[in-house]
Amino acid sequence: MNLFIEPGSMVSIMGRSGTGKSTLLSVAGLLEPLDGGTLNFLGNDVTRLGRSAERLRRMNIAYVFQRFALFQDLSALENISTPLRHIRKRSGRSVRARSADALDLVGLSDKAHLRPSKLSGGEQQRIAIARALVCEPRLILADEPTGSLDPDTGGLIIRLLRDWARDSGASLIVVTHDHDVARQAERRYMLHGGILHLAEGSSSER
Ligand SMILES: Nc1ncnc2c1ncn2[C@@H]1O[C@H](COP(=O)(O)OP(=O)(O)OP(=O)(O)O)[C@@H](O)[C@H]1O
Ligand SMILES: [Mg+2]
Image (tube, rainbow, N blue to C red; front, side, top):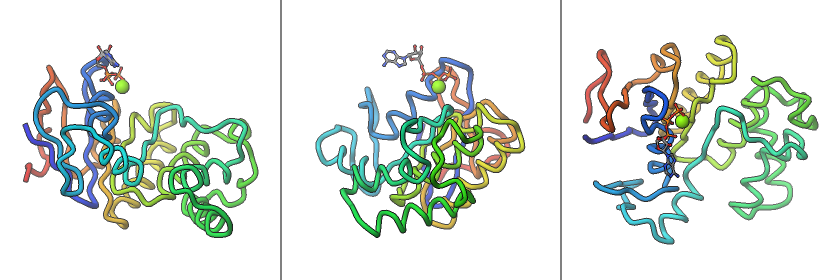
């Protein structure tokens, strides 16, 4: 079937362990090749992953993971700066300003200089989100982003991601085992037996 994700919208994917949800995100994120079908991203056919797909990925796609995946020996602010420095090859004052803005967006300006081990799980995930958003990606892939958090904190994390997608016009795919999280999406899918099924009550496919 077709999976089309409009700019500014959130799609959720649920399904049992081992059904291929993370694999689907890897394919959508241009990290793994398709073994069938076609893949279009920002008007480009990226079915075959070549150098141009690699560039599209680096410039436009960001990930958020269940276990945050922060660099433990860097401060919160340095974590957020990493993609600007190493992917966008920026340096100097603009990096500091953009990173500080992203930190402010997730409400943690007062924690700029703390290492991840000094932050709660929810705070670490907010830093990971700021790091994902700082390069203004067109696609955000979140693999169980609330899986290690309590329900209230998880709700805050999903609102941050969803609001940012809506405001910036980015597309957001969230894989989750949590029905409350999935319900936040404009369109909800179940992955079962290798097939994506549109959940009842979801707006229909384009
Ligand atoms: N690189 C790989 N090479 C071969 N098989 C893989 C690879 N990555 C995942 N798999 C297999 O593909 C299947 C789907 O894995 P995947 O991680 O996508 O599941 P998932 O739906 O994300 O599960 P969970 O909810 O437990 O995270 C599993 O059987 C897994 O062992
Ligand atoms: Mg998985």
